Length: 108
Length: 173
Image 1 (cartoon, each protein chain N blue to C red):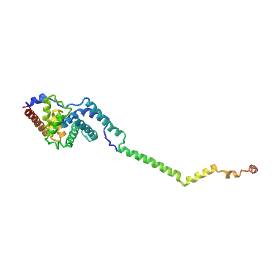
Image 2: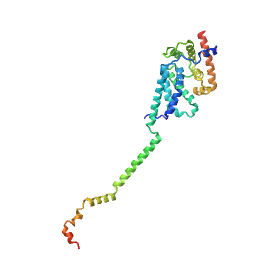
Image 3: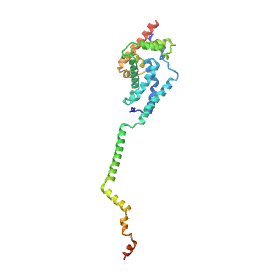
């Protein structure tokens, strides 16, 4: 009798599903999976993120050190000041030649 | 901060394609209601996606996903205070759900009675019976899914079949 019952019923069950359920459900699960996957694509793994931060910090530090050295050195300031004064403040140089006659008279 | 889930697309696609229907039916046989089974199925796959990195032996993949599905179904049942453990034996609420659910086919009386008999089983026996009878899983995997031994799984299946037969005989006369 026991074997007859299991043979008669087989694998049948009284459970049914709404029409199109499995297609819809599968699409929803894929959407969930895609959303989880996009989270991975938009975020750097923790280990690589540290490297990027380290490289960026090194670049900023290098620029900062270069800038400090370049624009705060006393020697560099005097040289530049002298250069600019020679270029644009040359009235003293030409004062000796203001009078062209004197210049020509001085030539042997 | 959004949680990072270390899973790539092909793996997720494969899992969905491979286990979508089997897990739905396994969950449905446990929670009975279609709408509840749909909710538990989604939670199950979310857990699968989130914890896939924890699966160390890919050969145990099927037992692993079935175990997650079983745990999610049991958790859902416990949340409704209808079952406290796998050894709980009160199946009245589930039988009532079976008879009242919109997505229950009552056309075949013997099939309906058979399922009622299954629902009268203690939760552990019912789980083992479903996994062996409907899913045709080997006892080794059933033991891994239910956290028991192979011998216990075989014993549970044997007694489950006896109880089902006895229930049907008593009801039908």
